[in-house]
Amino acid sequence: MAQMSKTKHQWAVHQQQQLSELSEQILKAATREGATEAEVSASIYAGQYVSVRHGEVETVEWSKDRGISLTVFVNGHKGCASTADLSADSVKATVRTACQIARFTAEDPCTGLADADRMATCFPDLDLWHPADLSTDDAIAMATAIESAGFAEDDRIDNSDGASVTTGEAVSVIANTHGFIQARCSSRHSLGAVMMCSDSDGMQRDSWYDSKRCLDDLSSAELIGQTAAQRTVARLGARRVRTGESPVLFDPSCARGLISHASAALRGSRLYRNASFLKGKQSELLFPEFVQMIERPHQLRGLASTAYDQEGVATNDQILIDSGRIARYILGSYSARRLGLQSTANSGGIWNLEVSGVGSRDDMLAQLGTGLLVTELMGQGVSLVTGDYSRGASGFWVENGQIAHPVEGITIAGQLPTMFAGIKAIGADDDGRSATRCGSILIDRMMIAGE
Image (cartoon, rainbow, N blue to C red; front, side, top):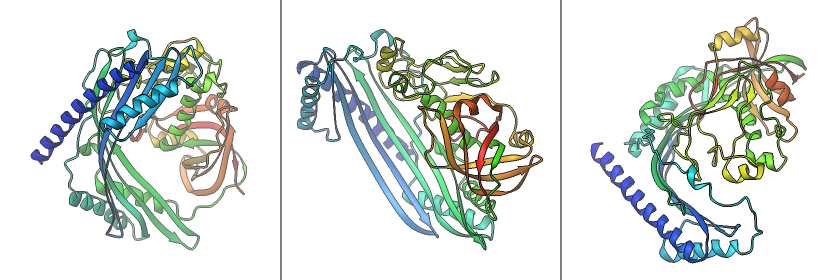
């Protein structure tokens, strides 16, 4: 094990050095080709995926991907090119292609690198590099243990769609002609299972997974299998409910989706294209005043932690929603310039969004009283232009704070602004499996289409 760790450390150091040197060479070559500014991102990924079904190995997959993406700016004209072939001839052709493309694109005064004085200069250790010392045999044994625990949890579990183990490590480099160049190593590992059961009403299936930077931080293989089985059996006897209005409680896995709709509508790329129902709403009350959301990009082992965004702009803790009001938009440099604002260091995404909450799952069920608990959403019926929301759903009908029976075959609908304003409570029951940390969300009333 120690030897394997040493080997992976040596691999990471070698790749950082190789990609950094190559990135610098590409920037120099782009400048010689006439680029006034340029930025390059380079990465290499190595991973293993193993799946087991009915005790038999179904998939053993090793992957190794690499690539370079180059963006050049020639006096306000932009060109992009990429390659997975890192040979000298391929890299040279990629540089030439990017510069040629720039000569044919329209001039855009908002294009260009992020401002030089915004580049990150402090690079704390965010503890993101935990390569897995896991042989293929060990991964197979772990996947087998996950599935076996699922079958053993309940006699009604009669089938499986498999259990899986995924490990992966990556080295990435970002560099630009401001003189910024930074390499980092990161890892991500996951366990998952999908179990099935059936009764006179038909088949049910459900799943569970966990994902972390460090393999040792994952839930145990047994717990993954047991949880997947418990969730599956709980769905037996599911039926529809009557059409009408009802309070709706979104469990954490679904509540994160609601938050992602809000953050997507706050992205600059949507705002300057007039494709967001939140355009022009900065500083307005979107949620109830008890709602707070803060971005924490420097969280140790965070699934979206970073000291800089994809343009090299330094990241910091930032409030997104303050006492229910929109505190800022989510901007990279280009969208910020289009809107007459400054980058919020969000080129490439949002980094570890935390949503404040109070109360356990039981507390949230008690506040729901009688209504619908949603545990799964289906379909893509969400418009960020108009705020219309309509999705297939399944979960449980709750009466007097207690789960009465499972529910399936329904649709829930509303308007996102009304749904956000109608949030009555947010729980502290976040399951920790996402870069958006959010517990259950209770909405006062939504339309349910059922029987």
